[in-house]
Length: 269
Image 1 (tube, helix red, strand yellow):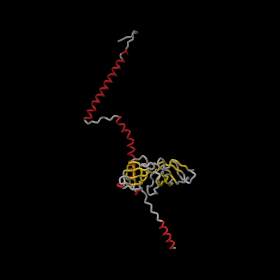
Image 2 (tube, one colour; image 1 turned 60 degrees about the horizontal axis):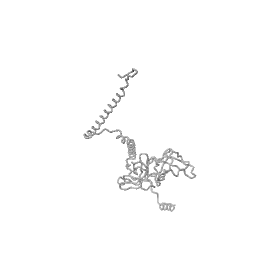
Image 3 (cartoon, helix red, strand yellow; image 1 turned 90 degrees about the vertical axis):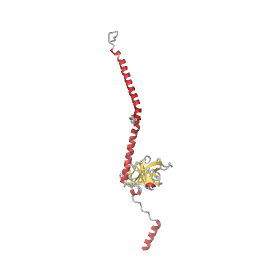
Image 4 (cartoon, helix red, strand yellow; image 1 turned 120 degrees about the vertical axis):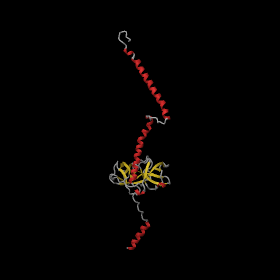
């Protein structure tokens, strides 16, 4: 045993050497393990045995799982809606948007061959998206509720007040028009289809009231809304057949017929 000049033994002199020996032996063993695994992987691949998935390889799958789960929930809701309306609905997929940047239109992958017709309501798992406006053999045009030429008769879910929701075009939210300043409408109210237009079945979610300006100096209040459906996001939609809506409105009598009937009553008198 080595001693110091003072006579005390130097027991700790060998510890660093022993620790370095342990670290060296561990590094050699770890390197041998890596080399053995590297040699075994090609042999396993040749034998048809799949290599174990690493956390890095599994990362894309883990990241895509919430998206796939949400998409599955949306498709399930569409199937439930289809069953609710007696299987008159047809599921479609959005192909692309319209070329005109000043219109709000999309094209879907079914048309005349699938029985689609102009005027049919289109919705997603959250609410009304729009209606079919043109039909081709294998695709159809859907005009969204946000388009400036679209109008949807609605009612306030809470109070039952009826009004009409008008689209405002690209970049602008739809609004309620022709609504009196004293009408029972509040911020946060949900707007549902009233079903009185013969296009949309009643009680479908359409929009939510986000702002009300009652003192406009005009006859009507200014009421801004936010669509509840994914008008610019939804990939899968449901087209409801016209049988799901209210019966068609009867034709108005021609003016000449009204005049003739009036003259006939005058002669009988």
